[in-house]
Image 1 (spheres, rainbow, N blue to C red):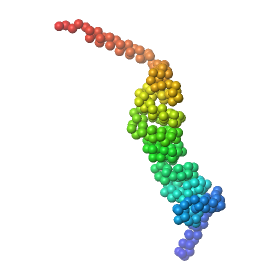
Image 2: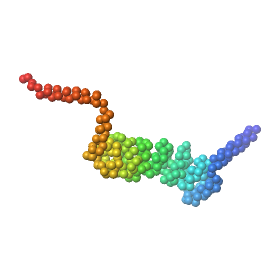
Image 3: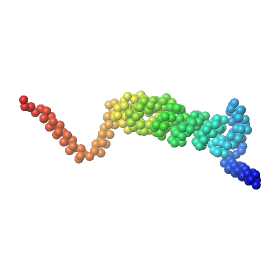
Image 4: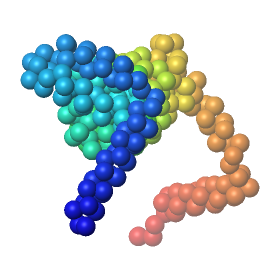
Length: 276
């Protein structure tokens, strides 16, 4: 009786497994699986030869069963490494497959590490592309500065990515403040903005210059406005005008008059003849 129950359980489990596999593979033909497996075997070099076509076919079937067409695209683009990367990704396997299918071998660096996959999952495709483009330079920036850093890094070259990392590492960005706004400007204007920021680090350390640049970056980037005298003329005056409009003068003017009277009284006291 116990033996009969055991056999029946095995049969049920096997049938369920086959049904699940068939359901998952419904959108992927067996011919497509076979074609990808043969492609991986032919192009996979020594690793594929050691695995053998039968093993590769079985692994491709599993990818297709779990991840559909994306699993096939990942295997086609990355080859035998796909299987190990996806297995190591565990619960983040879908994110790893998606990156491999989209970016190919370039994404292997990101997909092979759980912490990088977590960043990509949290911050989205911009962060994934930033890590793919900039490598290890991007990871600490993304962890520290989040989505604005992802958008900025996606738009700049490797050289400017390193420059941005240096400004963050030495504390310059923190000292300047307005970090999200600055990263937003880099995200909009790319290398042009980062070139200007790098060449004008000293000038932007002055708070009014940085505010002027962030308020209207394009003239500075194009070179039509220089940091210095024209900042006051083109930006500071309009800002001051807006501040003046929003000031409650009925409160400020009496207070200012009291201060002036106090200063005048103090000066008179200083010049009052002293008794011997």
